[in-house]
Amino acid sequence: MNHPPANTQIRVLIVDDSAFMRTAISRMIASDPDISVVGAISSGVEALQRMTALDPDVITLDVQMPGMDGLQTLSRIMAEFPRPVIMVSSVTLKDAETTFNALAAGAFDYVPKQLSSTSLDILHLQNDLIAKIKAAAESRRSHNKFVIPRKPARAVAMPMRETLRSVPLIVAIGVSTGGPKALQEILPLLPADLPVPILVVQHMPAGFSEPFAKRLDRLCAVSVCEATQGAVVRSGVVYIAPTGAHLTVERGNSRTVISLSDRPKNKLHVPSVDVMMQSVASAFGALAMGIIMTGMGSDGAQGMSAIHGKSGFTVGQDESSCMVYGMPKACAEMRILDRVVPLSEIPHEILQATHYRRASVS
View 1 (cartoon, rainbow, N blue to C red):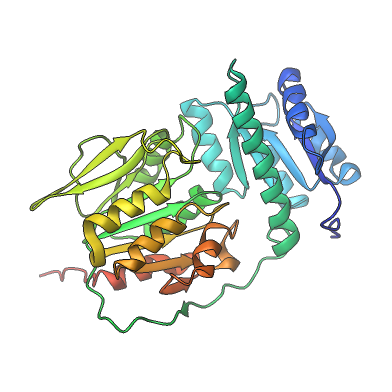
View 2: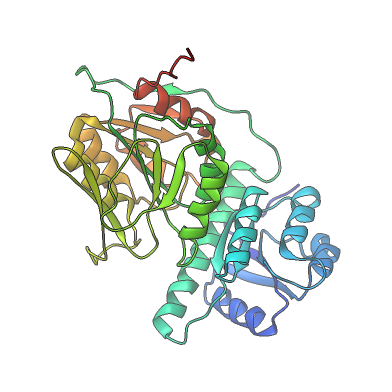
């Protein structure tokens, strides 16, 4: 399958049964000179019929549509016309669950469907959508992720520091685009008696973090919950940072407590991976483990640097297994990663670093 040269416009197909949403998304996309709308279609059936003729680079796809819904349409697209799809989802429990099913089935990312009456919120959604469309197109052009499966890479040991590293008491994970699918792949591989807690900052629109935590909890042996103010951090529990609040930790003599806040105010992402990891580095020093995974941008680079600077253990997801090699790349370029591994090997890195030994059965 041929791909357009990098200097041509990104061709986007909009599939949504709402005429209002087709118009709104078209206008948002048309504001960027690097993107063109090749079609705005009201049904999944018509989208599949016109896919060859329109040959879009990226598709935006409504989750809930009459007849063939978004998930069914996505399955057909990935099987017959593989290319990045961005789901457009309402923030309801049902739609959130369908969205996560779509991500597990190969969707690139998703955006919330609600359009606020405030111009600031609309501008934020527009910027987010455009950024995700560009990342999706770049992922397809650079890595052929939606055409030819790549062979998994082997783990790479980075130049190790001479100081003896202590066993981590906490794991901090930062992830964005491609994260929901990636987390659903690795967290179920961790045992219920994991000897450390895990803090996760996953960039998500409002309304998605709680149902995502509940979904992971059903899939995992470890407990998974949305982090709450004042919660005492416990081993064997994964805490998902809620959308709209930075997650930090306060460590005392006998316990570690989660704190949620809207400060600092100057961060692009709330929650911020940097804020969470810098807090973990400050509280745990060499006893911290930081993991940076797939995602756009560089959130987490400062946080991973803080953990590295305190002699904590740092791991980055490798390029071949990333949906978007942005956040790990920023850390790799700063030379602050002790290990670079494929997604599938991250659970092993956690268990090995924490000296996990399954209790013998008497």
